[in-house]
Amino acid sequence: MTTGSASLDVMSSDLEPHATRWPPRGSDLPSSDGEPMETARHRLQMNVLIDTLADAWAARDDFYVGGNMFVYFSELHAKTFRGPDVFVVLDTIKHSRDKWYAWEEGGKLPDVVIELLSPSTREIDRGEKKRIYERVWKLATYVMYDPFSHELEVLTPSDDGTFTPVPEDARGDFAVAPTGLSIGLRDGDIHEEKGPFLRWIDADGAPLPLGRERAEDAEQRLAEAERARTEAECARTDAERARMDAEQRAADAERRIAALEAAHAKRGG
Image (tube, rainbow, N blue to C red; front, side, top):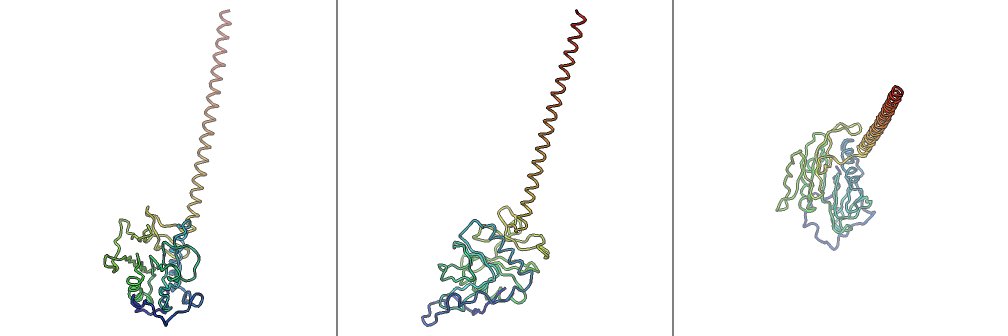
């Protein structure tokens, strides 16, 4: 959603060193434009994508996922930045950041960017931003999604480096190279907002879970385990009762046999 104040006609040639134009550094550079996401639904959708991926990859330390923050991509031109709604950087060190400086990250730029379309940003997301992401950032995957109309387009570079659409798979999802995941729409309300929502999808076709979904799943597994334990206990109780009944019947039969033998012996005597 954030557009930033970057020159929108920045090209690869604009990134050549310019000895007399050194930018401010570190805390002198803003991390965002201070503007909130356009709607509550846009903000919720952004958080869903960031939080579920961060949780799913919590054990990994070789990635960064963020959003609605500035990515600076030229050390010599402080105005060359973009503010993706969601972005993922692979093969990097996971730690907290409030902005991304490519020149302090070994030259790394995002591998995946997701822009949440709105009436005020649609033209930029499909035009100038797309051109920068294609020609300068050289994204592996660029996703554009409208949280209200659910319009979804996923792009990846073709052989000549220009973006080409990623085809849908059999489930209607789109592979997001090189994450090993897909992305697609899934039904389900989140907080007060009605579904569907754009979700990261695993190899089995399941969305990476939200915190509450993980908690609900854990509760369900616990309940199933408790039911299984109760059923096993009932089965053991039934088996014990059956064993005791069998023993009682055997004892009764032995007593009857003993009584018959005693009566027979008495008559014979």
